[in-house]
Structure formats: structure tokens, C-alpha cells
Image 1 (tube, rainbow, N blue to C red):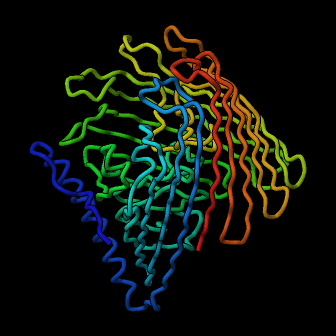
Image 2 (tube, one colour):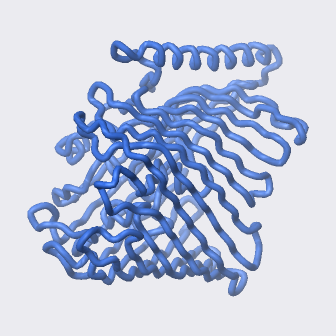
Amino acid sequence: MSYINPFRGRVTGCSARRNGVKRLAGIALASLMLGGTAQVSAAESPKYEWSGEWNLRFENLVNPLFPTASSAVHQHNQRLSSKFELKGSVTWSNIQLVGAFADSRVYLDNDDPTLGRSQVNTFEPVQFQIGWLGDTKGNTDELYMKKISVGRFVLDHGSRRLLASGYFRNALNSFDGIVTDWHWSDWSVRGFYLFPVSRLPSDAASVDNNERAFDKSDTERRFYGVYAESDDKLWRVQTYWFNEDDGPGLNTRNRDLFTVSTQYTSPKGSEWLTDVEVALQTGTQRQTTASDDVNDLDHFAWLLHASVGKMLDSKTSLSAVVDLISGDNDSSDNKSSAFDGLYGVRRFDFGPTDVYRTFARRNLVGIGAKMVSKFTSKDNLLLHYRAYWYQKTPNGSDSFLGNQLEMRWRHQITKPLRLEFGSAYMFKGKALEQGDYPGDTAYVYSGFRYRF
């Protein structure tokens, strides 16, 4: 298994940061080795675990969701997506090694220009990490470390609106760096310092041909913070700092953003269901990635998600759902107010991604209702309605985006094999009735997941 070293050298002028990162990695690795040495004499036999899954999905779209010209996107788009994942771990005393490969490919895509690195990432080590397992039975009133790891990670935090690996999307998010897990009082706390991994290759022809190249991270792009979750799973608090600079082969918007989020969810098994999350975001960023754009815009943005529902019976829930997310419609005021979704995913809030390409988590108002029914032990049905508006209307455009209906049915044939069928239909509002395909958008997909 090959691993891309995230702590490699940088261009002249960045040696201080490079040396700091190397020292940080060295300290962490030394801690792992010292901790492991102290435990090795009493070590039991190594424990091995492995698992995997294969997802195959066929999608078909008629009339793209967003305004476009016929020369840019076909009216009919289809795609066959394959995602294979294999994960293994070895635990010996307090030392743990974790590795995972993922192979994401796309076929029958009809030369769709929206196909990109979010869907194709061929035979890539998405995880490769070494960790030291600390105290797992400490006094709950004291601060103690549960684990520290160095390497490449796939992470999911809380609601997954700000940091997630990606399930429906065909390719995974991964990060190089250091992750530490702690427990204090009634909270599990994670601290991390990460370098987001860029999926390669990046050119359209290579992506379309499912070609491969090892992914890499850049020390010019840094993502760090703290994630905390209460032991009763009711409260989650997240703080993220995201900093990026231009570098060799890397043009950025020089984002320097701080995001804080608080989420409350009702206790598991409750008759009344509540999920409320509020996020605030501040900092600076530039309007474009152009090298001659050196104007830092003051940034302040926000997000509110709220759903309140009730169990209609032991198998079916019905909830009212609201999403309010700040946007920006004025590029001349030297300010930025469009929320940045960082490394979150949006399929569970706004509908299918990939071919359908649902709305981004910015400049959006969504109001609707969602029903989930596990009407048999093997069947799970989702019905979801949303009405959408721009939070800030682009100049010269109507604010109403349309009404969306979504359906998803999952059937568990056997314990490892699950079938899934879904669809979405957007009755376009005036804000989307533009371009060469102003008609309503119709989308269907079918697929399966096999776990082993």
C-alpha cells in the first residue's frame, strides 16, 4: 500500500511552516512509538479485522436541474457508477494499523461535462494510519486520551453537514494529518489537524477514462479544529478553522474561515423527533482564484437547519423541515455572505447528488416535510417534499426555485445485500426556467450494496 506523505517540503519562503509540521508529526510518531514500547511486553496476539462493500448504481436524468446551454450539457444524462471499498486493521496491544482502499469508477456517462473528481477516484488508498490506543476505561470525571493517530483518514462528524466522507456520492473525502480522541466528564472530544486530500487526476479526459494517479494533500491548505459530542448523543459542538494559500499548481480563494456549529437531537426512541443545528462562519476570502485577485473580502455567513416531527406509529415518522442558509448577491460591496459548506455532504437534506446535482448548501431557503417508514423488517421508504427559494435573489432573477418531490425505497434481500430505488422530480420555478432546458427535471436511479 502506497501512502502520500502529507509533510513533504514546500517552496522557498515556507520553511518555517514546513518545519513546524514536521516537528508536529515527529512528536506524534514518537508518542506512538513510546506508548507502544511500554505495552509490547504484555501484548497479546495481534487481532485482525477486515470488511468491504461494493455499490453499483445506474442513474438517468431528463432536463438538467440548473440552467444550461445545449452545447454544454445534454438534455438526457445517464451514468453507471461503481464504488468498491476494502478496509482492514491490525491491533497489537495498544498499537493499531488501519488501511482502506476505494475504487470509484463511472461508465455510460454520455460525455457529461459535470462528471468530475467527486465521482471518479480509481484504486486509491483513502485511509492509512497508525494509532496508539490510550485509556478506554478511565474515570469519566477526568480528562483522558482514548486514541491518537497519524496518517490518512476518512471522517464523519455529527450531522455530516460540515465534515463527512460521502456515501451517496461516488468518491470519498479523505485527509492527511493527526487525530486525537479524548473523553472528559460526559463528553467525547476529538482534536485534529488535517490537510485535505485532492483527488487526482484532475483533467476531464483522464476522469472520463477512469485513469488513476495517487492523490495528494497540500500544506498550503489546512483544516483543523475540535469536535465534541455528549455521551447521551443529544448535543454536538463543532469548531473548524480552514486556511488556504496559493502554492505550486494550487490556485485558491485564500479562504481563512472559522466555523462553529451547535446541534441538538432528541433522545433515541422518543415519540417527538427534533433536530436543530445552527452554524456561524466568519473570516476572509477572495472573490476568485485568479492570481491577480488580492482583495480579501470580509466574510460572515450562517446556517440553520430545523426539523420537528412525531412517530405516527412504531415504524413511521413524519417531520416538518426547514433550512435557512445565507447567500450573497452583491459582488461589489467588499463583503462575502454565502455560506461555505466546507467538507460536508447534502444528499440527506436536499436530494440526490452526482447526476441530479442537488442544491449546494448556500443561498438557500428550503421548507417541506419528510416521512420515513420501516414498514417491514426489510423495507425502508422515504418520501420527501421541499419548496426552495434563493435566500438572496441574484440580480434580475426570480427567487422561487421550485417544488421538489423525492422518493427512496430500500429493500434488504439478505443481511449483506440491499437493493435501492429512488427518484426526484423538480417542478421548476421561474428562477430555474432558463437556458435550453426550461422544462421540469425528472430523475431516477437504481442500485445495490453488497457488504462482506
